[in-house]
Amino acid sequence: MDQPINHKTTASGAEGAQLVLALPKGRILKEVSPLLARAGIRPAADFHDETSRRLRFETNDPDLDVIRVRSFDVATFVAFGAAQIGICGADVLMEFDYPEIYAPLDLGIGACRVSVAEPVGGAGAQGMARQSRVAVASKYPNIARRHFAAKGIQAEVVHLNGAMELAPSLGLSRLIVDLVQTGSTLKANGLVETDVIAQVTSRLIVNRTALKTRPEAIGEWLSRFRAALASA
Image 1 (cartoon, rainbow, N blue to C red):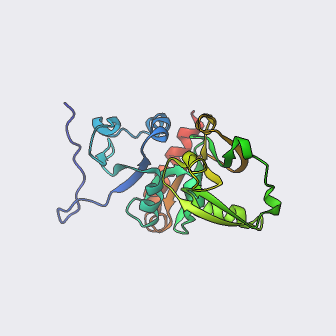
Image 2 (cartoon, rainbow, N blue to C red):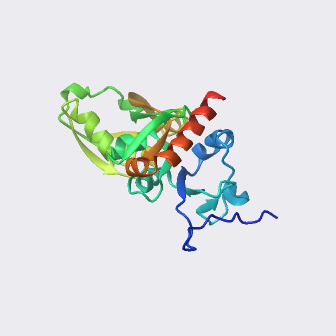
Image 3 (cartoon, rainbow, N blue to C red):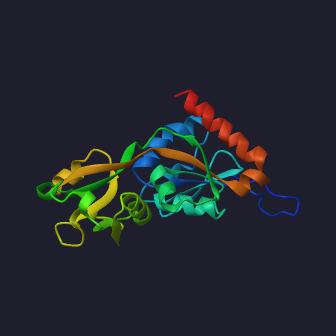
């Protein structure tokens, strides 16, 4: 049985100042695991157990813990300094645009795209150039509004966290803006991709304040991730 890893303590006996690495649950976590291994990060044994209710895990490095959270929450934890380093998709960074976040490394994993889609039967029937307003269902309200505003169109966004593909058929919206990987879910729900807003990959992100106050510790991890990418 794996034993808990003892953390370093300060002279006062309190637990030392650790770095926290925020990682997203789901598909990206599986894709990033080999990169973590090459960077020398070995989380506790139950980290990859999806049934585990733990959210914070020790690693083989006593100065680093990892947390496992929703992909959208990774950026929030890092922006507010609860985690100093994180991994999240460029879509999340585009949506929130946190000034507190520095994204120095494109990890080249989790490739997908943020796209506009609409029902197959009506695709292209109403040219966007002739529209002044459109209803859009999305979990990316800021991205959607900016995209359509650039075309001179006001987007009335229905904010959904999932099942966007149902919105057009149930009358919630005419269009959706969502993350697309293969397009199979769109096809299965009678939708077609009509516009690609942005190509997306996962990025290593850093809290800017942490980078200024702990440059050596953060810099070491940046170097290790760069070396891990180079050795892929």
